[in-house]
Amino acid sequence: QVQLVESGGDSVQSGGSLRLSCAPTGNGYSNYHLAWFRQSPGKKREGIVAIHSGGIDAAYADSVKGRFTISRDYGKNIMYLQMNRLKPEDTAMYYCAAGQLTWGGNVLTEARYTYWGQGTQVTVSS
Image (cartoon, rainbow, N blue to C red; front, top):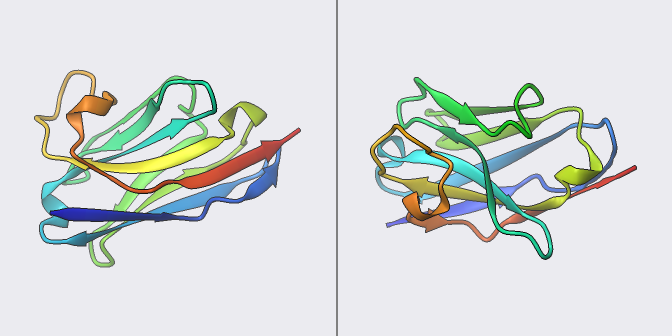
């Protein structure tokens, strides 16, 4: 069983930066692939970035590639999402997810993740 707690959401101006954190609790943090999804009102949840359990690979959606960076701190058991050059269209609730999927194919698919956090709100104003 893994519980995920997100933090770091805030309101920022367009072009600004934020760093989100996801702190899994429970056992086996390093055994899980982790990902960030986001959902805006009226839209489907979108997978934006995922990182391999061993940190050896990451996948980014085109919408965030080059602006967002995912990382894992195994000593602190925390995953980070550094978000730079934020745009109003990045406004959403951001969710951390964990799963033991077989890495490969589309790792940004919601159904492949088992555990979910409650979300943290990011609002970007123009």
